[in-house]
Amino acid sequence: MHQSHASLAQNFSAETLLSQTSHRRALSAFSNEKLIQLSSVELPMHPSSPPLLGLFSRYSIFTPLIPTTIISSFLLAGSVRHWTVSKALYDVIVVNRASTQLVVQVIANSLGLLHVTVLCMLINYSTRLRLASTPTSLDVLQLWTGILSRQLDWTLPLHFLALLLIFVAICIVPGAVWAAAITPIVTTKLQLGSTFLPAYSNLTLLQQNYTNRLDLPSIANSKGVFAYNVGETYLGSLLYSASTATTIDGSVRDHAKFDHSRFTYHGRSYGIGASVGLLDDNLLSDTLATQYVFQERGYAPLVTCIYNASSAFALGNDTVDPENMYMYAAQGYLPNSEGRNEWSRYPGFSTNATVAIGVATIPDAVGRILGIASGNMYPNLNNTQCSIDFQPTLFNVTVNINNHNITVTPVDNSTGMTDIEPTGFLTFLATWQFTLVSTDQTSFYSSLVGNSFNASVANYVTSISNTSATAPNATQATLVGLTNSVSAMVDDILVSYASAQIMVANDTRTASSSITMIALQIGEGQYIIAIAIFNALLFLVVVEEAIRTRVWKTLTDFNYMNPRNLILGSSRGGGQLAEVVDTVIAEQEDGVPDWGQTTSHGVGNVRIVQHGSRIILASES
Image (cartoon, rainbow, N blue to C red; front, top):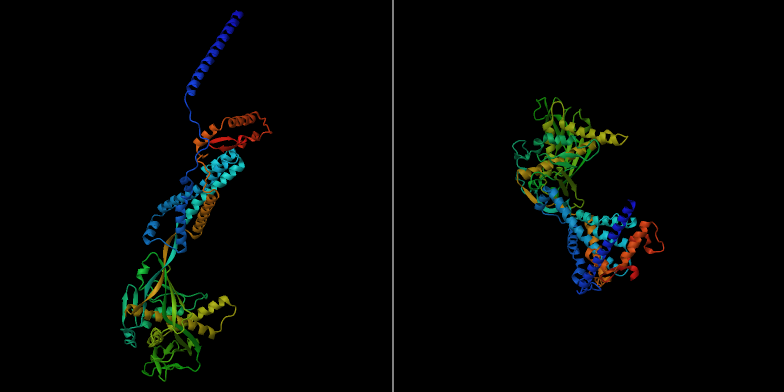
């Protein structure tokens, strides 16, 4: 039984061997037949060298730089000349911020891609020339491929991977800088304009019945009440100005205009800026206007207050109606009265609660002087005297539209400035209002103007006490507080007369102004400069390479980034490259590297070179 099985196995083996032998003979016969057929066909020979790169292809490296150079130059010129977009485009951008940002990103990435394309073309041309002349390892070729494809290849050696990471990171930068260079940013621009200012070419209403307390020309509208009897119309506001003329912390005083414009003066008004909020509706309604600046001529009232112990202006009995026990008079002479007895009446149980202010009642009096006589309740104000020097001055007026703020600054070189009202009637009326204020506000129990003056005095004492260990003496405090109050009141009186000239007399003139407008500028300066410099440097590098290589004259159209070129070049290079690679792989798999061969450190160290249209092992060259 056992022998029969062995005999059967021998027969099966013999049959199998015979079958395999027959099969091999059949394949051999088939192969010989195909070779005979192929030998009868004339196969084309591969060219020994690929054609040179065409002229158009070589110069195409400059093409991506055309739009980037034009755009970067345009942006640089716009940044230097402060170009801004039109108002229509501004509205579109502001309303569609998300869409604008999308467009910016698309454009920026496109321009960045153009720069990266030029950079990659430089690297491609340079490495192709190197591959055709210098042995190059497969690792280096893999690095070049990763750089030009801008894709991370984690199979690269660590030092090559680091270089690839750096290059990929660098490729992100141009697009990011372009985005910053073309993103619309909010800025401001100056625009020339004009504004209306008060004029004094028509003094009819200013001089009309000025001695009357009632029925002087006035008008009331949505912008406020405007009148020529300033002292009485704005009595409460003037008293408030006097009481707050000195700030308790020594800071710059802010105070509101006497109209409905809601504008506030920062510091002294000097009687300037009356037209703000009245004749500038076109600017106030412009959502893009933030401020405007203009120059206006006026007066800089210089107030000097002293004690005059020999003052001839004093309180006494009413000589007109001596039987009236509740009426008293302030009368006497001021330094500029020119022999005229100044006289005014005040109600009261006595003169104790009276603060009287006398002025020269003739318009052409030399100088403008206030004489103050007060009762026992206001002893510090008695016999004080203030002179007001109305100096013609040119002022810079800055109007902050957003904050409703007005800042008036005297121009230093205002010497010899033309007087805005050379007859002197305006300055006379401004001084005359102090008498009207003092007579109108006096009560049987106190003097509101005296209280206002003393409030300013008290504020001064407080401000000095906050900053100094030594309190000012009473005389100094009174004179400083009084000076500040008179200055504040005369400023507001001049503004009120200017407002009346504008709104009641319609007497105005025009002046040029500089308007600050919100605008959108394309790009931020430093990023525009950065992208312009980068574009210029890249252009210079391309030109330098073009000169050095004579516009890549020897560069062929063999491109290792083209898989077809790489496969055909390797196949045309023969079998030695494959044999060396197989040997290296086998050594690595066996774990017994042959350290005597240059290929023993891995496939990546196998060095190749391009010869014509072939990729061959470096040792073959």
